[in-house]
Image (tube, rainbow, N blue to C red; front, side, top):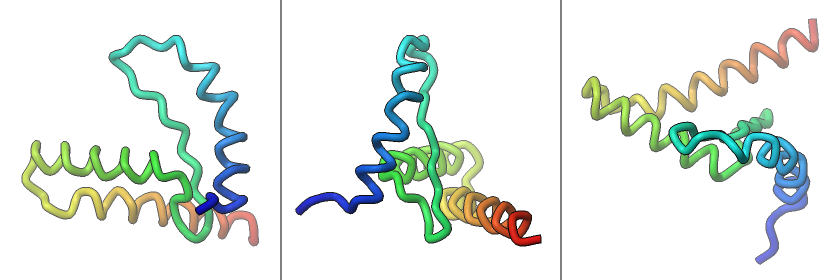
Length: 86
């Protein structure tokens, strides 16, 4: 099964950013985040947010942390879209 055209286009747009930061120290994770109005379109970002939510959960015990991260991203997209319309 072929990835959707938007996924292919997205990966080609993220490639220069990945190359630019490829020399970062291994202590850092560079993950360009691309979010469309209908949700996170980059599977590696979904994995990153899930992993980050799990680590925060391990730290503070809040089981909904991953959901909160995805909701924050959604709110940011809605706010940005609202400023474009206004």
